[in-house]
Length: 311
Image 1 (cartoon, helix red, strand yellow):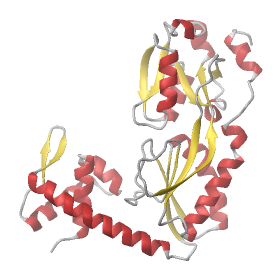
Image 2 (cartoon, one colour; image 1 turned 90 degrees about the vertical axis):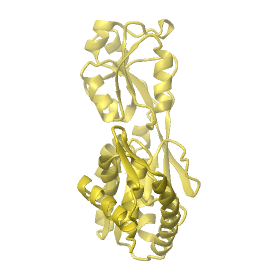
Image 3 (cartoon, one colour; image 1 turned 45 degrees about the vertical axis):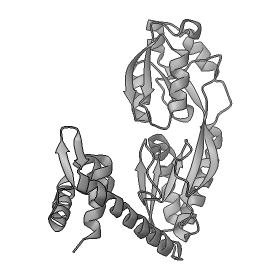
Image 4 (cartoon, one colour; image 1 turned 30 degrees about the horizontal axis):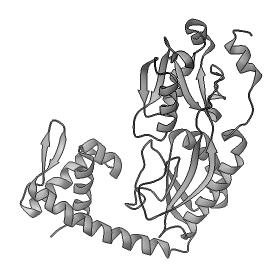
């Protein structure tokens, strides 16, 4: 008899290609994923996935099973959303996915206040540079800066994030003030990997510094901040985070880096669930409260002094 959990594990492995990636998504061990696959293949008496040096790939039988399993998955998820949407209790788990820096420096500290108001609501905070699927119940709420590809979501812009160009004073003394007219020749760049939330800012930086050398790419904004703060090079960073890093100074530029929207997303079937609604309201209020920090309008005098090498 087929076990839905076995199918769920099979789908995760088919989508993500490796035991480790599937295990992270499912919050289980790699051995559990492998055991579930073996169980499903034994039940169906057919091999569904072949292991290759580049990961697991579907067999012909596996491709057919995936089509049927995804159809079943869609029905199960629709049922879960329908039942969850009728839950009138202010208790239970709410999964929130967001960009790492927003999660660590804005949302996580604020959730203590949320817990004081709703002690029976538990938050699972999932900082992730890539978009998790709300339709697949990988998360209940998403706080992002990029428009989603999913079409069954409710989206609201709740704020924005200003960016700036940063480096340390030591780095600037060694390499000089970056000159966009020269493509910042002789400079080093710290950028984000493709398919992360900050590709618009990466495009701005690489266009402005077209003759600079990229020395580090990362999916972690926090890693970029710390790399720049240790003299690694120029980086386009969120001002609310980089301005708080004493070792970094913001470099005046003629063309301001593009800002990023802060978008709040929830699946349309879940938006009225009381515990999810409470968390949505809390996140909105939190982001709006931090508005002047997330999008500062000032130009600090110390930045100009620091770039000029003055104390």
